[in-house]
Image (cartoon, rainbow, N blue to C red):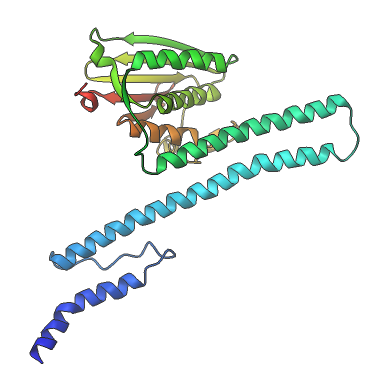
Length: 290
């Protein structure tokens, strides 16, 4: 009898944890177990469970945001395409009118291809990255390839590239990188800079030193409000000042994931007069072994 009484008292905290845990579902992931009173094994179990719930809740929120944002971004161009084709079929039109409609639909389809590609890349990078391979490469050579490809692909945009500092030893130019992903990040940053610049121009600067490698993307677009800077790398975030500019709110979120995957840092500075500067920094500590 005494053993039964004492064992019941000992197991009571565990029973309480089980009962509370069973009430938590996908509909109330914000719920948490009562904080532990004692720092014993049961207290550590409760703390670990609460931390796990926080991670799951965060993942659910990101997934929900992604699905809602993707649905919205895909629905708009599809609606526009459908409307244009329905209007074109309402009556017989001249060949020039049909050509105008086809060109308009083609532009919408190109935009749809861009958003689809970005969504696929963002989804892939949000999952485990075991299949992504990295190799040592010179950052200046990678930037040269990017600049050349960007100019060919965007003849109406202006990109000025300048190397401001360059170390004598090649090892200080080396980074562990996935070439395709890093080129995607650079292209998104340059495209974003040109999009918000009145003259559709971006200045790209390379500052490679022993301590770090900095790559700057500078435009003369409007300053980014301070309240927007904290959310600028969030997926599908569109500030009030950017509503008039065509975009999907995925490009910078994709940049953030790619840069973080390379153990680097991306930041934005809008304090300089007339300039908005996005900076990608590779810290020297991340590639000391090269």
